[in-house]
Length: 274
Image 1 (tube, helix red, strand yellow):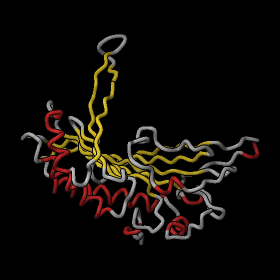
Image 2 (tube, rainbow, N blue to C red):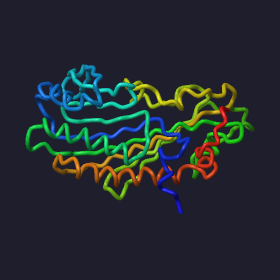
Image 3 (tube, rainbow, N blue to C red):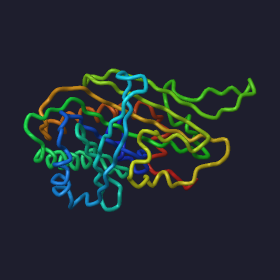
Image 4 (tube, one colour):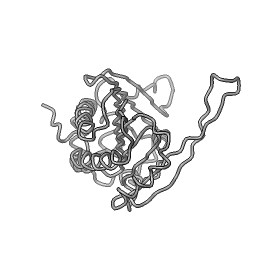
């Protein structure tokens, strides 16, 4: 039987480097008028802030497309290991330091309760998303390939005089929650495997990314579990958290099934500064 408690951040030397939970809701036209009240309510835990302006290009209306500006408000804890990203139609809670799903969801629920207090009535949720990023570090005894199970893994072409450089695999699954789980597996000899849509993100990088990585022909790996579920429910923090717990169980189970027993033994604390 798979030990679900040891499937993600609870392993002593867990490979988890980033967690993101997103709630998409009815667009609030005047969110710019509400965000400072929201920040005030979470200021004790997330005193840092910055405003981000993103320019989006939309095609379809004219040959050259049209542009629009999107504003996102970032709030950060003191050591920049956790943060909130608020938009007119979504909120993200993300972290590069992860203790357990219990603690993560407790903090997320606190953030959602604070947001609900400033939202206008009749705001509903249209989608939830939960994403985990794991960095697979090779050791002298266990390559990245041997830490990933199933059909995933690089295919050697040495006999064809072809040298491996980079691997990218993407598989999409339908889930029992009515959503989709996208599992991305990457390996590379270069330091270019972090998802460009997530990094940089104004948070301090996880300590695992600071470890020395071999510069020889040994690839570093990454597993990215991106689970999103469309739905139509009221913006009720307790109900949202229950949905997230169910989504988390699927992500956790997927992690357990796509990583090898040898890797799990390694992550129990056998890292020797290799």
